[in-house]
Picture 1 (tube, helix red, strand yellow):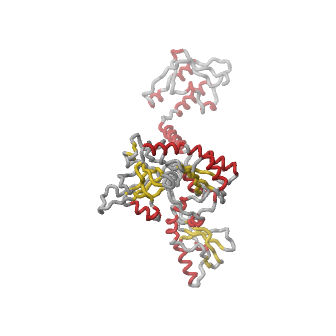
Picture 2: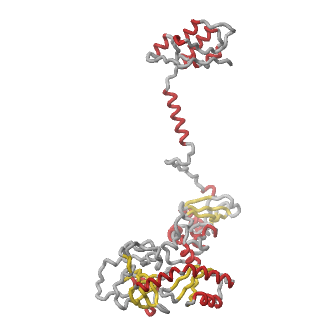
Picture 3: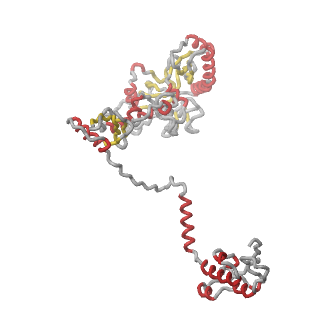
Length: 469
């Protein structure tokens, strides 16, 4: 049993496990996301009048609504499944609104009171079973109807199919660019489906609302979620908003202009009311200038000379109004290049720094520099000691700039280990004096005074001899 919360008669969509023919138990949450649902803001207010409104709004499939009269005074509320009068037979729908608001809706839609039908009863179990069996056959009927229309060669598209509640009539919704001759088609449909056939043409916007989809804004289409009335949209709306007349960008999935172009039209019209006319011309000493562009948000107008329209000059609308007033008095204004004020550059601060690609690299470089500055520099003492050792060994001054690792005083070696330092330059087959090696291994007195807390570490392995030195 279905309460018809999202699509009336679709048992796959329901508001919860607890539902009866009387409607949903949680009426407040039933169908709020469905665009045909109506919020009754007078539900908690008692009617001061003694007579109660007996008009009820009932919704069906394919965004169809109608108004009925509760002649039997059946207790109904939003979500109740009812059996209503139809021609021929009866139909099954879901109550979408009750009370005094129904009169306002009828007045808004200009629904004639003479054509109001009546409600028979609340739908019983037999009505619901027939109703749901008819809904299950709609997909197969739609595919078969498309095949028949294609075989006959009609230029039309069957968009959707709707069975009546008692399965006595089928309504085919179709879209077509031109007029279609249905005489042969209705005969084929009546012979194939054995019931009464009704053809109803819809627009491309209604077709997009039934199919659904995602718009260019990234959200679900407005026509398939909440938009119920489709207003006409023309190209003047795009011109007021200073948009380029590009059909590929301005058209929606229905192939027509987007409905959202009407949303901000009133704001643009209010802003353009303070602007001078776009056909305004200025008489300058250099020649006549015309308006070539308007910026609604910055409140500026661009002008260019008639003779040379390559150079554009932008002015505020307040200055343009003053220049127009001068022209009306018969005075010519200065040339546009003299009236143009230099633009003051606006200094902006990028707090997120998303435009700076190497922001992390610069940060690391700064940290490395600060660390290098905080390190103790002992290269001078090593170079002095390396120079003394080079003089003792008879070496040239070129090796003093780059001392070897074994010659640095930072890591002195222990003589007891029997290891010898790496020589900077291979002597001419003469053994090195032992005094020189001892002098290199032991730190000098001056270095001990400078770094008294320095510890001597032992190397695990003796240094390798450099054969290429």
